[in-house]
Image: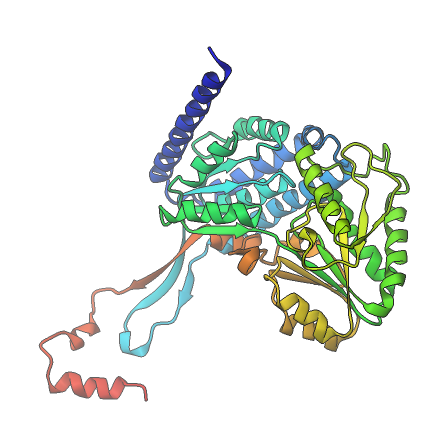
Length: 476
């Protein structure tokens, strides 16, 4: 049989299995539409145990997909926040599930009102390649806490992680509760077309548009986490060592392949040279060498590496100054670099970089810095470095972004008691913690009346008595 025909048959079989999995989950939800708190906590406990027991296997699989991924980065950025998120949800789940009592106006008494939180049904999650564990487990925790069935579509760029997670989750969950879907782009597109009760996508803005369009055919509500160009602002008086070190941490983690990594940094024009030197010292302090450094993560694949090199070629051909932090690349371990003299005509200033390249944009005053940010699509994160509280408040009040860190980077994402999500071009909706529970729940308003019915006073036929009543109740 020709290879292309065999591939097509296997692909079609995968699509057929996809629909079977969805049908099984829909039927399982119909049979158990409101799992009790004890059942949900048992699910979370099973998830926690398998992640904890298999952490080394997960570290190895992710590193295999990247050709090299720092084991400590996987622990810090994937396993630890996943386990903390599970713990937080388990601790607060019963309180989240409680019905919320609401007030009933005097005109509608006697009655009671409450909001109950009902599982949506079957939730789809499309997982990107950059953090294949954390960005699968985070939505999974929220969806399970809310009592849903969940289908996870893992990226084709992380096959080892996808296969391992499929195997591990199958050990603790039946497929009609949690399942992992693997496959290439056509499977991903078919996945997004399923009539889910909610669909969460994390990835590029360009793909997010296709996902939202496909979901719209079924009126499936979506949560989109899309990234974008997240800026960092260095103030006129912040110690440069403080700012450079914290920005360098956020930009070098996972070799910059992070949706909330600083994408460019706005620096006062008279501090650019000093910032470059402080940043170089920070990066070289983290990574004294590039070759064979176990702490330095590689670019995920050759296609992404070629994309990044094309950004640099385009920028330098249009006048940018490239300042590499290391002498040369080592395979897919791409040298961290700064870019000076950048302009809007360069691709690197138009697209999300998603790699170890940091452009520097000089500014004169904060008004100019805010204008630069506000003239562009709203970012997923914004970082400000300065200890003046009045300036900090200006940042919060005069810019828009999905989230903000004052004098740090990335770490707002790991706070379980805060929502995470984008705005505008960087996404819509949010999850994490209680907000995740709410995203994957239907907040259903319930009005309760018993035998006595005062509403009979407003039943037809109408006359003078109803007019007198309306006059008494009318709010002027």
